[in-house]
Length: 264
Image: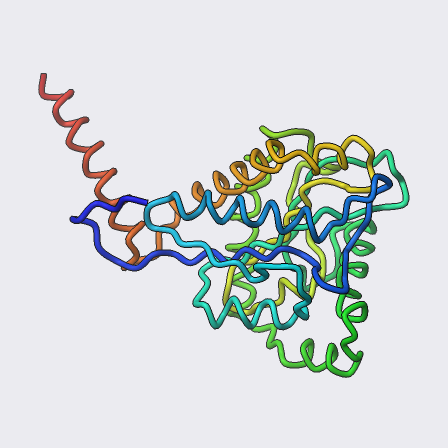
């Protein structure tokens, strides 16, 4: 990454969460593909894409094959000063004909549909696979304050997730509704960080599983997610950030060009 010496300000921190890990393999395809391996591969590629963007910096919540609780993932994101949280998944459903990508944000009023509820319930059980007690999981839920701050965060999450979903349509088909979906994912319950869960594809679908194993397809997914994240932040650059200075400089340049054209 080569930054202009004239541009100052902090980098935006994008926390990338590779779903599952360690004793929790996540979903497993018929070909033996494990979700935890696919998500880590895509997360690493996405981190490289983000780090190539001036004004942005990626941090990986899980850098290897080990287990982190759902609450621990959001706590780490906050400790690392994340401006955005992106959780990468590749789930399975009983109907193996179901395929395509989808993007989810937190819902405070229930899931947007039954499939979204089923998926959230499945993902929220990940802590049990890692040996976390129900009491501890309940403590995580009880500690989250769903206040006005979180509602504002969800609004930002929807806008960002919609940008990512739009970019993913250029990679392949998207599943079901063309809109961002809502469900009660524990991993998205950060009250102050725009958060989304990206279902890259369904590992239970044979064609999706083959694509998920392909490094070039993983790279296309990562590039699409980066495009969506980038477009959102270029539309909403935080004051005082390096990106805000970059966007201001670009807009100033376009305004100057417009004046020059008008003056001819």
